[in-house]
Amino acid sequence: MTLAEPAEQAVTQIVDAEELRRARARRREKIGKWVLPTIVVILTLYFWDRICVWNEIPHYILPRPGLVFQTLINDWPILFDALLVTLQITLMALTVAVLGGVGLAVLFTQSKFIEMSFFPYAVILQVTPIVSIAPLIFIYVDSKIAGLLLCAWIVAFFPILSNTTLGLNSADHNLRDLFKIYGATRWQRLRFLQLPSALPYFLGGLRIAGGLALIGSVVAEYVAGTGGIGSGLAFTILEAGYRLNIPRMFAALFLIAATGVAIFAGLSFLSHMLLRKWHESALKRET
Amino acid sequence: MQQGAAAGVAAQTQSRILSVANVTKVFNGDLVALSGMSLDVNRGDFVSLLGPSGCGKSTALRLISGLMHPTSGAIRWDGGKGQGDLGVVFQEPTLMPWATVAQNVWLPFRLRGKTYNAVKDEVLETLRLVGLEKFLNAYPRELSGGMKMRVAIARALVTRPRLILMDEPFAALDEITRHKLNNDLLDLKAKIGCTIIFVTHSVFESVFLSNRIVVMAARPGRVIHELTVDQGYPRDEEYRTSPEYAAYCRSASAALHDAIGEHA
Ligand SMILES: Nc1ncnc2c1ncn2[C@@H]1O[C@H](COP(=O)(O)OP(=O)(O)OP(=O)(O)O)[C@@H](O)[C@H]1O
Ligand SMILES: [Mg+2]
Image: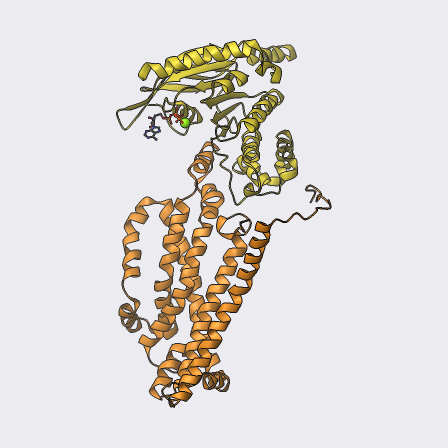
């Protein structure tokens, strides 16, 4: 496009001591952000390994990290199937939570009466621990997958609902007035003003919901208990526990944690990409 | 027929476009924000509402814009109020941070169901008028305070409205930027031929810009003086340093002191 041509001028670098110090600090911070946690992880693994050796702890009580890694590779077919099941339920629950949460939030902002009538139910669902509802759900729902999905959804949808509702209601007041003066319809106000205003709030809720969906699907599987085809990581942990296969428990645990981190990182990246052009949270500051 | 129409247009240039008739606004049953305000706005007027904080200036603008309705009295648009007849500029630029400059200026048209391509020429032309044609793809955060205000003005002008309401639009800007925007606003008004109602705290600004100054007092909010500034347009830096300007400032200042003194 025909924006102003870049000013091609030979800029002489003028650097003062303070600038230099700041640049050095920035570089240190950038490197430290990766190096420090890596060192901590390596040290942790090292001492874990050493403690097992020094104290002659048997592997069926605390396996050495190397053995856990070995198990991860040897049991990969079993673990990977379980991972896929857990991942599938988590992502499906998250999707339904997004649809349900955003849909309800929009409905709430369109009608105060609907909000007053149904908001209490959303709160009740949220504050009741999922482990206490899950057994009932598995009595009434025949399909195990559907039951797991329902549990994960109940846990995940509230942060999306409450954050999106907050976002939809926090559109700038002057902009609201402006829309009114220009005769915007309800739909136009929602589409051009409220939804964009709610986007940062929604994305914040989504990041929380991603982790909660994973927790929900894992907890629900513990409650559901029974195995069979289509068992996820939680069931793998339970089963390995019965057999005192501790290394496999650790391997499955590692996969759950890694999944959680991956979901969080993925959603953070999505959030950054969607907001980087305009929202304060995604802007780089000079100082 | 032709002659009749031309005569009609000529007559209209002197004519009234809005009348505020004895309007009162009461909040919460006992807070009289505006009491018995009457004001006839003629085509081409630049009316300033000048007064201390809390005298109901913003309330008057909100009533005229239709955001609120008077408790008593009436606001009438001569010839009816059509879509795009009104533009507004608030104290803050009030831009959508997620939209580019061009998209922000497009908004009044967009809300009337016009696609960007259909009104692209108007949007670009208006951005050129306020001197921001190079920034159409920039986001508001990349602009200075003065430039943001220009975008807000462009958005108010883009539909070529009959009346523009401005509520202390330059109050948050520094003196130099404010002078520049004052000059540019008069230029724009001359080019587009709109009518402006402008709220300000500044005596100097009101005398520089307007041909009529409505001085208001608080508790209850009401009009206590109306001054006419008999000085033609264009006005420039020469006017700003002229004895006439100083004289008008003195009388406007006296009227304002009157307004403040009355309830102090
Ligand atoms: N929505 C409202 N509800 C209740 N009171 C209000 C409302 N809007 C304004 N008021 C009151 O009406 C009075 C006039 O307010 P207004 O905003 O019109 O003053 P103003 O002249 O614009 O002041 P300023 O120069 O500070 O902007 C004030 O006392 C204010 O508190
Ligand atoms: Mg005000």
